[in-house]
Image 1: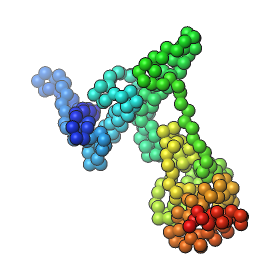
Image 2 (image 1 turned 135 degrees about the vertical axis):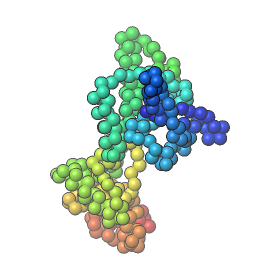
Image 3 (image 1 turned 180 degrees about the vertical axis):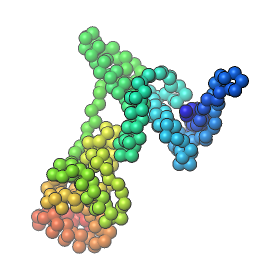
Image 4 (image 1 turned 90 degrees about the horizontal axis):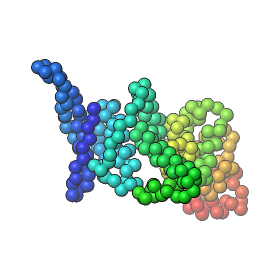
Length: 286
């Protein structure tokens, strides 16, 4: 089991020390005692390095991620790691094992799911809902959460679909999503990018993934390969989003191999750009 201790450094801030705790049974008394092996340390600001991370087993990595999620959650309360209060939550063993497996699979699929982080975020959300109900019944504002600096308002992430409409169109193609992902990977290979693109990643690009990743920036080449796949299915990307938006992603890639003039002509021909818009597009490519 991983034990996490913290210390302070004047220059680098909070230091995190990692220990492996294991039980030893005395041959004489047959009683168990705990011993600790120090694995290493890292500073919270810089994060754990790969060499230290490699020393941790699967369960220890989960323990560390849970602790880091707790520390991140505490920032909104302006609380430091050594100021946090520990409580115990008892889970059915089968459910706990399932959560750990799900956490590992989510990581492989590039989906954000950390057990303690999910518990804390949902606990806070529930507390806000409860305060709203209590205040409505009582007829006045209790300000219980506000008194500790937390708004009781439940924020709904506002995700502008905008150019992400390209990725949403990919999800609506009349074929299995796995086939769409394969086609995206093939287009990425043409750009020299040997990248695995699982369905959850496409959902994230479309702004449909985890709330925490909904606002995450998507690279230009991702929009480019999305356009290429849509074209193969008879869908013009410039019918989904403004041509002046798509050309910014498209030209970033094409200008690596084509002159601005050649890129302009190819764009006009490929995406059926009208003459009145071609002049504006030309300025964007140049």
